[in-house]
Image 1 (cartoon, rainbow, N blue to C red):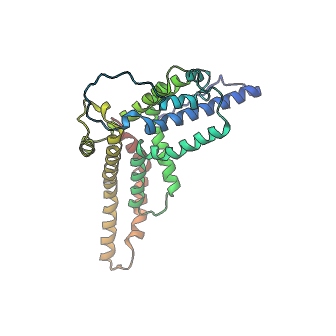
Image 2 (image 1 turned 60 degrees about the horizontal axis):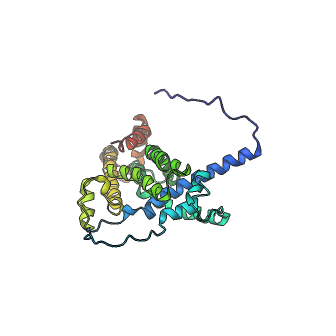
Image 3 (image 1 turned 120 degrees about the horizontal axis):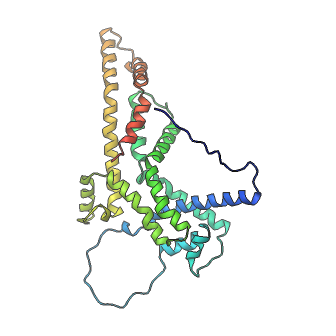
Length: 305
């Protein structure tokens, strides 16, 4: 496989004016903060999280007075951080830039939600479980260490989720930064790609089970499935798939253990641990078949639909 690298020859000059560098850093910080807020608010404030309730009879009543919602709070909190276009969305609200303490508070609050999002709504769960089972099948206790497995799972999850992240950026973050949509529309658009990814990886059996327990449904299509039903069904499906892959990984290594144990018993070496003898053969087999490349490719391909 040929790897093609492209280099941008028309890059910026070596020396930059201080104000341009500061503006670039400020723009990057604004974009990162808006991305974190969009993903976090999908879970916290998306209207689809509520379970479907029976339709109430139609009663003529005066139009309710519009009350500020989560989208309005997003506009006021991130309007100044999103640039001039996003700041125009506040429409008469407090337009003073947020103080540094409030910005730090928002960032820290979003960081506390991100681990839950990483585990519940991405491919991270399946990948980390399969890699942990692989380490146990090889007979290795702390090699690779936990930090390496978590880092490898994180970057492989970013690779798998790249199309979804690009959709969120194109459909939600960029229009909001340009002042084309409001905060409520930002939450709705950012949640659609995540919902589509999870629904493709969830078994119908698991969805049906949680929908029956929640007394929700039936649904006309997959878009109508609320997050309160989709999230536990998605996690259950991911656990099942990870254990199925782990079972297939264990089989060849169990055969090696059985062969080594049989040979040791026939030689009368009953006090010799079969694990010590079989571990080099397991590592040799894993290296000869290019196990890491096969494992990474298989895990990434398991999410293809």
